[in-house]
Amino acid sequence: TSPWMTARKAALKALQKVIGPAAYQARAGSYTGGLNGVHWVRILGTRPDGLLIIQNLWDVGKRKMRRVEKPLEPSLVYPLLRGRDVFRWTATPSDHIIVSQDPKTRMAYEESWMKVELPLTYAYFKEFEEELWTRQSQSVRDLMEKSAFYAMYAVADYTFALYKVVWREVSSGIDAAVISTHQSNYLEDKVIVPDHTLILIPCESADEAHFVCAALNSAPSRLVVQAYVALHPSPHVLQHIAVPRFDAGHPVHARLGALSRQAHALAAGQPPAGSEPAGGSLAAVEAQVDAAAAELWGITDKELQEIRRSLAEFG
Image (cartoon, rainbow, N blue to C red):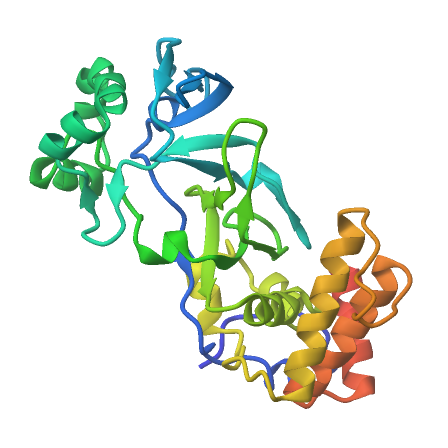
């Protein structure tokens, strides 16, 4: 009943200890319905009255938009994390997104509210109303019919979780990172919003997020993903990697979380915090992650060696 997989025989035997449903549910990132050039923006500056000066990312995606520069209220503007911004242990937003969807109702903010509370944001979307109505995504079209023409998809409470683990949906493997908030030159510290090319797991704390991230970045998890005949590491990958629910009192869980923090610091070129375990290089820390993950799943040293050999053969 397991996925069709290819790897060394001893490694496949060891992976049976890893394969199984995770205690977590993965989600897709925010989706504009194929019109990123409207919702995705670059902040050019700020005005004395606190308004942002934005330019739409008119040339991203298949459909090119008109280039527009406008003042905008900052309320619905968030740091945007794209697939190209994410690597193993590191993720840094490169632009911004206007989130026009209420995460509570999962519908677009009402036009009557938008006109009064955020008139400049409403006027901005109004400039693209014709194009927005031509979006082909049936899910987005249904939401437009039920709410407003600037509706989005895959925006909910989990999108705004303070701590999230993310990885690229289109990739030959899984390279996860922990994200939280981001502060740019022109925008206050706000929660990072992943785009539709990313998969996310919402977490309740930084410790939990780092534990999940370390488990996913470990050699056993990566081999489960790479040993599939064909796979995009989309949300269903968690059906096959048995990441247990985080327990702050479990020594192995705590060790994996601490190692992830150290790996993130090293990947970002920063010195690890003094309270975290000494590891030296990133490669040395990743070796400790593999060892801790092996202990988590009951994998022997010999089995871990076979898993690493199989990963090396995949390149």
